Length: 247
Image 1 (spheres, rainbow, N blue to C red):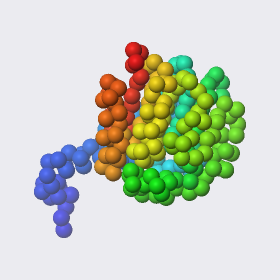
Image 2 (tube, one colour):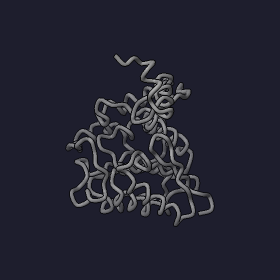
Image 3 (cartoon, rainbow, N blue to C red):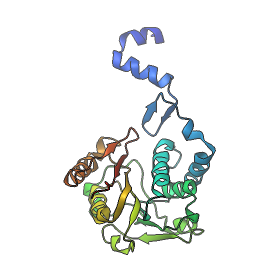
Image 4 (tube, helix red, strand yellow):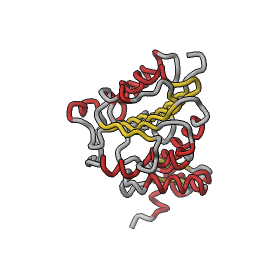
């Protein structure tokens, strides 16, 4: 029998370091293992917001607390920036619902525009999408029920970029893009960039999550370079871009 002690002697140093990190980790979910202080993920305010998002069924049986916290943090920052909120890629509304709970969105003088097909990635766009480990299902009626209590939410159904002109806002403070597909993601970023207020934030869910998302990674690096900005890559796989005050 190969004991754990013997096994640890024969595996490479890099693997031993990973095993030690896993044993001492404070966080291990959503493809991320981290030996870090994670108290912020268990604060009452965030836990309540996260549970509201999770209750939509957007993440199945999995958890992605750190990724959701990034969106909530960005929204908390953006709520003091002039402009509305936009999310392109909503699915069942988990991320948006968590964000709204976290920032108490119903009290804000802002609109939140939610854009999605509410039935998955269209066949004509799958050539530029990452392979997914799950299938989307029809969820439009469920999403309408989830956000029925919010008078300042506008649900827009259809494909991006065709639906983008339905966002009748000239100033955006918070833009979240998560369509698992490079083509509509870049179309949305290009459409909204000039409308993002100075200091406004762009949250990219798919920026560097894993190898299948390399199309998005390259596309947004090119997008950022042409606008003389840089995407902040996060260990969650997300990317953050802040609109400079002089652009």
